[in-house]
Length: 72
Image (cartoon, rainbow, N blue to C red; front, side):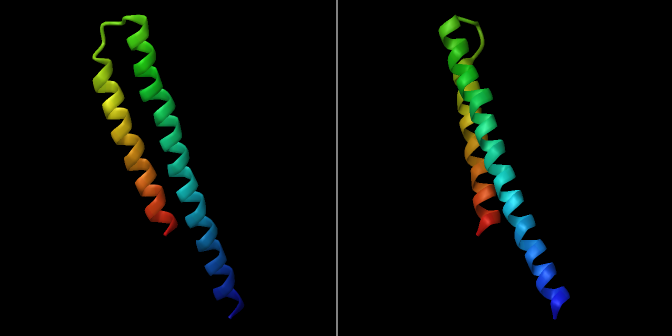
């Protein structure tokens, strides 16, 4: 019975770590793509900044959703 409890605790820690990992990916994606796209807008760079921001938001929500599903 002792090995089962240890295995269950390891699985719980692994699950929490993966959830936190996807939440961190979500935050990093937001910082890189969304804020980077907004900064390029203010600098007047000829990039389709709205596409970068929109794609960044989609990826942010996808990573956050994956993290949430793992933690459930």
